[in-house]
Amino acid sequence: MELNIGLKGRAETTVTPENTAQAVGSGLVPVFATPYMIALMENAAVNAVQAALSADEGTVGTRLDVTHDAATPIGLKVWAEAELTAVEGRKLTFAVAAYDEREQIGGGTHERFIIKPEKFVARAQAKGKA
Image (tube, rainbow, N blue to C red):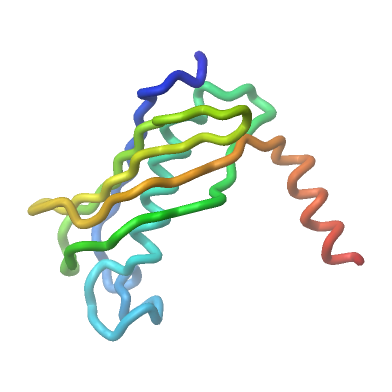
């Protein structure tokens, strides 16, 4: 498989007390937390391209420009969709959107870079030894 513009991915979950703004500390209310929405968007982007990468490659998120436009209460299903919109060398750009069972709750763009996980982790661990 190739990294072609238009590859799509999806990730979903249900809002629980554990993934609310109140539980995470990103707010005081028991609704789906923005950090979890962002993680869902990133997961959808990973799902869009992972099968097109070689076995020794992965991606890491490097940039997000998203809005969280509507609150989702505990009990509703939420999902994110990502579509690959640009490939510039190792840089991948995605259009991302998140939804609950009633409406779109967020959207924007997300960038990821293709990496060799073994090399990436070794470099990160070396920072801790410096």
